[in-house]
Length: 370
Image (cartoon, rainbow, N blue to C red; front, side, top):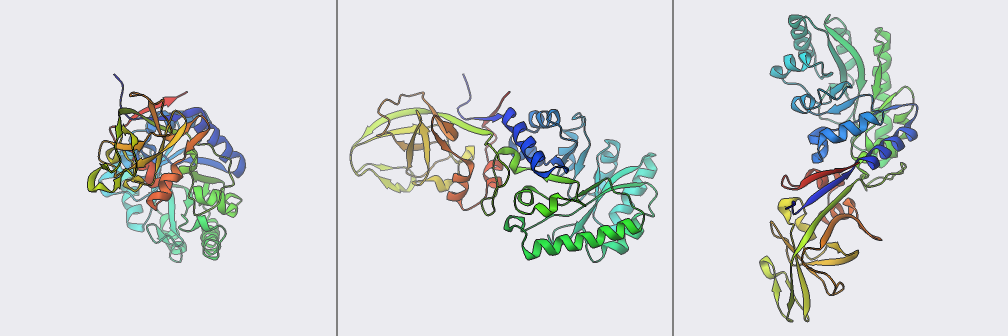
């Protein structure tokens, strides 16, 4: 017996995407961002594949994600803030910590002293994201205080772009100007920073200035999975790594006028061959696919009819008369010459690829090719 819904991650393609990004941004290094269990895809196999492909370090969002990668063999870095009770275990685990305020930096230094350790840190700079870190105009003064804390090893400075999908917009250029002012102040204080980074996946594709000196590191998340924010452009040749499949549970011949699904949002206009598919919104399929999306059966795109339910959806099989119960149904990915990319779901839902990938349900089995 196998799982009804299976998400297959193509690890060789993942590694190929990593190398493609690295080629585009060279000589910058590429740090994969594997937060939220690698966007829900399974962080262990993905981290292993990326480290084998040459990733020098990995970024996450919070401590338990960092601990899950303790055996990865490369430095693990938390990008967001750190809470007081998280400081000691993260220092003991050797995790690179963010400095987001003078008070948190002081707490990290004092905890490191108590443990007889030195905490490796990157200074988080808010140049316009409005979310966390030192406000750029306050940062030069704050840096003078940070360098006085004896148990901090400040090896990096970074910021984040909220509008990088717009390319080198006026606001993104202003963020770069602000960052360079703070970087100059850091150098004036004698800080010799090993890592200087700003570019995320959007900036890698749309703001190449953030992938050139003085920057020597970029952060890449969604691009590794072969997806990108459709609001911007794509300059890295990427291939999708995901295939999501299920099976046909039942096939019936319905007369004209038959209502289908909750709310009776669809009614057959003529006799129709209906297929019941073992997948629903509990598996991560957007409700917006109802009466609008399609799936692939034997390499043919067949329309979804009626409203998705939690565990099932229904399709019109008139164009695939040879379909049989138990046939594989491709929800995402390629079957023959036909393909359903993640972005199709994102467009129908009115969202972006991040949301789609992170929403794939916990009962969906994750499998790995290669």
